[in-house]
Image (cartoon, rainbow, N blue to C red; front, side):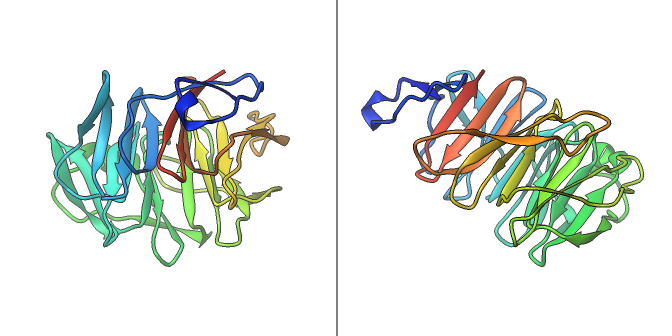
Length: 254
């Protein structure tokens, strides 16, 4: 990793084909998500932001611990696991309780709750919300602690750091069986082009290679070395957004 503009932090440079720069920083970044050309984040004080020009702008008035942007819109959850969608300049409440959500699939919304149960919201509901009537989340079999979808497949990890992949129909929220992928990770993020990145329990970042329509689980993991433990990553339009455990953000490109 070649890092520019961070010499004062004493970070090392590694030649691995990635060049990283320091975007505008927001103190104590906790989590970041990129999709549809948008970049959103939360900090350790439960503030949500979006990247605009040369700085971060406050996103809505609701305190959030996790925020996501993608084809399903901008969604988030608060510390009580309440769910929100960004509509008309602020977040509006959505039925249900989840602790992590992802908007990066084919317009469906997915997430997991505090009991590691997995849920999906059909694309017809996500796009039309808010609308009259209850919001019906479709439950999935299995247990996951983190779940993320892309244009073709959804990837997730469980409490034992096992990694799984499945195909989810966005209009019906039906899914294929889980396929376990070799490796171990605490989070998995699928980019809007189908690229898959994971973060291990000790803060290492890996990219999955060899993913095709006939081999959706891919072939191998390639490490992207950083000199500090990573907490969270997201990928969109050629940019790998990285949040370190210390709260620093990097924007990396190949």
